[in-house]
Length: 402
Image (cartoon, rainbow, N blue to C red; front, side, top):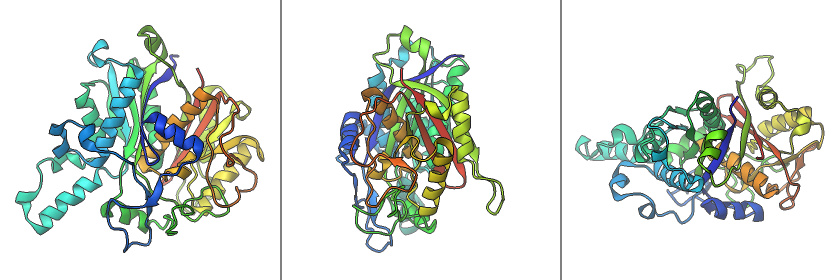
């Protein structure tokens, strides 16, 4: 069966704009969390978030696209441009239907939608942008990427919240196995506006700590909820033989295994699905837990959810059985953009032979070998990435160094 490899990365994150800036921040433990400035958070119980720094849309997006795109979509288009360039991919060199696009989404472009609804309520229907008909839509990133790069292959969007980035990559691998040479995949999200903020507060899972240094401390004894962020990663996935035939500049790694599960209904005696997702992904890759060199954890930051993930990892690998890391402690949880950023980070770890640290203010949860004291040079060759989405979604993806 054909192998699916990653040949290009594009990253927009709260602690780095561009892949190498982000990777440097991840290795040095530089946080992108601070009091939110994209809107006035002073009246809300949660005030800390991760904003992409220094992003000027006019520097990256054609003027004709600015009126019809949300901040989220602009970040996604920018990340895609960078990923395509990083892969050295020329869409015109492939068959007309040879490149697909699969992205993840949560609630769509809520900042654009909120603005237009405010215009409707306060001014009238004549002041609502015609672009509202699609600019808010949860599939807008897939659509705009496809149009901008004339990518007419199989496309789609996955709505499984934080798990979506892994699901998008799993779907991309399916398309490649069916004969599509390349698929642009991943996720970028941006929910830092009142319409995106209030539903997250209502979940009861957000941290209410106003100190950016302590608000989000996942997989530790000081965990108190999660902090939202914006951004994510877009990856170029390709059929391995096709990538080598076109002379791809580099191969970051192979998507060797993938699986997804759904938790049972609340109150059921059936176990949660995260462990089954991890086991099935390893089985799909033809590996065992002993073959895994590092785990990139979901790292909710919610004490009960962190404890459940820790129990899953201990059951799979034994106490302190494998290094565990959560670089999202520096970015916050990026909703539909978070898991694909974890995958990009894991691929960079495989490339450079180093595990980036998790930044926490308390002690790691018992039984976990959480990487906390700075980057660990351990030359990992295989990584397991875990993700959970609100509503019971679980996903696991296995990466193997080339």
